[in-house]
Image (cartoon, rainbow, N blue to C red; front, side, top):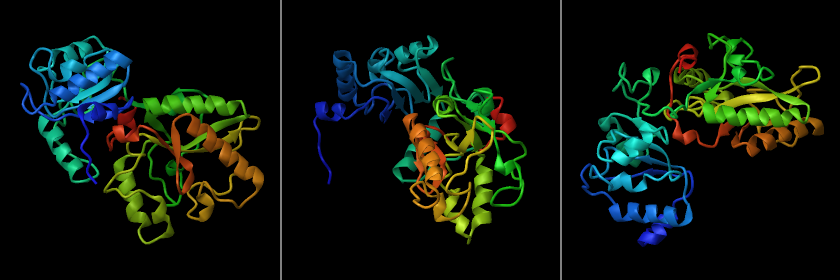
Length: 335
């Protein structure tokens, strides 16, 4: 049931780290100025909320202090995505001073993205901007030096993170090689969180053994087509909505014993299409369940959640913030 909130109550709903889509257009047309003012005043009075991500289709402001300019306060804003910052020079100045993450993307694409979100569609795939500065391979519209959310190769974080990339082998549910290289990438915040989990596990005598990380969308489509009509289809993502792997925010992994370098035994095998793959499966040996549960507990402490039907699959908390990608590992290594 719809509920009407007053200004103070609606502003109070905003939490640290939230993502806000703000309507209106340049020059003050249909911009929620009173609401933006109330949010700015709340931050000045309480120091909350912090680290907001703002998005608008067009630059919002009056070329002075209105619109997004009201929110140009250190600590309040972490990231701004818009077609430009000309109408809100205070935000542009924060980007130029490297105080916030900033992206400029095509106005038409952002408008269509809003339409698709309102329609409940999973996302927007477009060729607009290819071979320009908004092409992910050519900068992705980044407008500040701190805008560094890139795919990080996991073995560069710590030499004791080991790889066993099954899709670069024939030892996988498809029975054939689908990756040209045995490499694993994650978005930088997810990679940093993974490294922290790896270091905590070392205190228990274990390290992380990576089976998969970022996965190009075309590979997800291949998996879906190959798994059609088989028990494995439950365990692969529908390419219509993409997967968290496509966003660089999902990782498949297990533990290995630091003493002997061998992978530990879990209740079920990687990519096994049975109930043994479920993270709450109660069968198997107690020591196997104990290792599985230790892995889950540590990963959850560092911002990951386990996939409901795959004990090895963990999703980073901010995965909705990242786009579906379909670039090669070679391209990923250059980002």
